[in-house]
Length: 121
Image 1 (cartoon, helix red, strand yellow):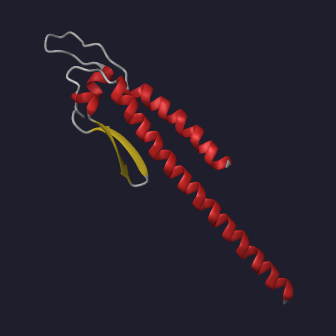
Image 2: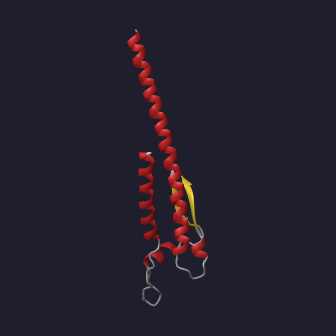
Image 3: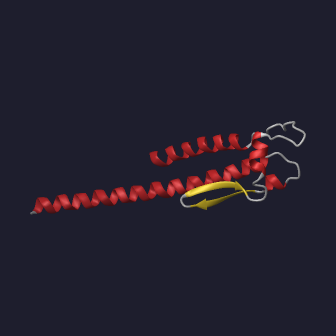
């Protein structure tokens, strides 16, 4: 009887430790997501092409489910056109201004580093 009670106690303690570790990881990842999203918004506000300045000021983030989404709340229609260029009425093409893809790449790298740091402790 004493041995089974000891094993049950051990398994409860292991489960408790894993639960605490999981909670710490989840909190660390959530904090990292928010930090990276905020940094990406700042980066996009700086690197966005400026015609009137409204486009650059429009970058924001919001939480959807468990994800942090970075988007342009004022001129969302322009993101694809500015990033990739487009055809004008006269048939000529505008030059693309890649600013979202570099910010995304930087955000991915930064998030991966933060995830590794959170997991390693």
